[in-house]
Image (cartoon, rainbow, N blue to C red; front, side):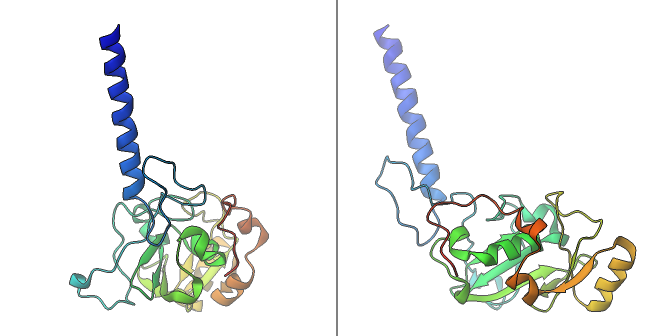
Length: 210
């Protein structure tokens, strides 16, 4: 019996070490770390840390980047690479980038950047991009035209906000799928109520205004 208890004790201890190590690997840059062996603070998101800029890529810091297969959206936790024609990305002045699964997640993210990326602020955004739904090309998010209320559902299968490189492309889409064209400035000021309701529940400590 004593030998069995010893084996079980070692197994539990080993599992705790593995879990602690996993939390440390996913700790977001700039976040204050808890003491070894303790749980991370409730306001730390361990799901989607930003990706650092890779100078070896040959891309300018502010250029749109390919989406890593394992990248996760900081708003909903989905994998943007699986739905590339809906994806968006935000690049910060230090070169870090966050990949988002849709323009809707982008505008939810912009409402409160520190909530989703610890240590960052909206004022430090260097560039941001959305994907043209028709062509799959990256478009500066501020210049894109978005369509609200169409019959085309986004990656979350509830709500949609597809992006287009031009007003003409958005109008052609609306003729087929319905909806209303809207610009980035209007979406940053106020998201339609039915889209705002899709925001994740608040996390204590991440609700400061930006």
